[in-house]
Image (cartoon, rainbow, N blue to C red; front, side):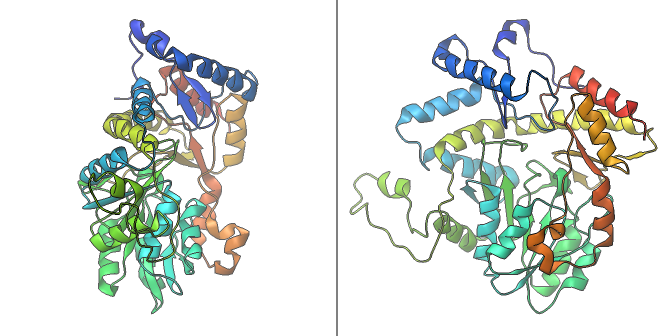
Length: 425
């Protein structure tokens, strides 16, 4: 326990010159992929200029290697890069992994949230939701013509407080939106019990929670609809992408149409069937969007799905190592993991009363730190929906996110621990 990713064997060390550029990390191609070497060199150059020669430890760092490179190369050489065989394979494998009957791939979790609420026909109603989340969660409510009703949070898990949900339900409530914050699942039994009593669907924002479990059950098949993020910083990355999972075949079918302009049959579905008559023909039943995933992203996702459990295990080891090091700091409240859950450990979010000073201190030690999140109700666009949220308003000012990603080295972990412990509040 407590060890970071093991060093690569000496024979492979030349292959793991990682090049950080924005959200992506690439691996130097082997001799068989020398066509990519010029691109890799360009990334090194751009990265050195962008970082000004300083080596910062980032909050997140995705990790791709030659397996992802080969997967993308295979798709590029196949002649089909749009939604096709790889997309269907990723959907089938991900649905099986999370224990859902249906999975609909998309180009982002934001799109998944938008379509999830669209399929529930919430326009004109209210959606009970958490303020402590990225704005895309609650933008989806406004984009669907509904009203966000903010509910306070549990100060320990930072998830929506189930005990506060019941008091927010009205005749206009059309859905309950929950976010598994930092990968820690919400109290789904209590939330689903409340929802079922009132006949209200539950939408799970599982952007942080790929691989998380609640009472032994994978996140992804409990609520009415679950939405996952596969962007560059997430536990499972397709560089950018998302997935909608559900056990409702009607919702899944409608989401599939909505993701491609409301078209009844996608291009791959029509043209892969040799001998079919009038393959060009399709119907458009309602206004839709262009937010499908393509085979390039899906190919990366298939590789990443195979790595997800081991990557989450690495996150867990670093998480526990931080916990042991910071437990004695009386000025820091470390994150918790409730006994009934297994968190995906997406982010290490601690509470420190002098949060901004700690972030400045870490920056002086070339360590990035951040805040997840400024609550949605504090943004101007949500001003009309503000309400009394005493816990959220107090807690968010103390939140600090420390670096946590599977490829952290022992040296990087040690630097973070030393710098945090060196802080004098």
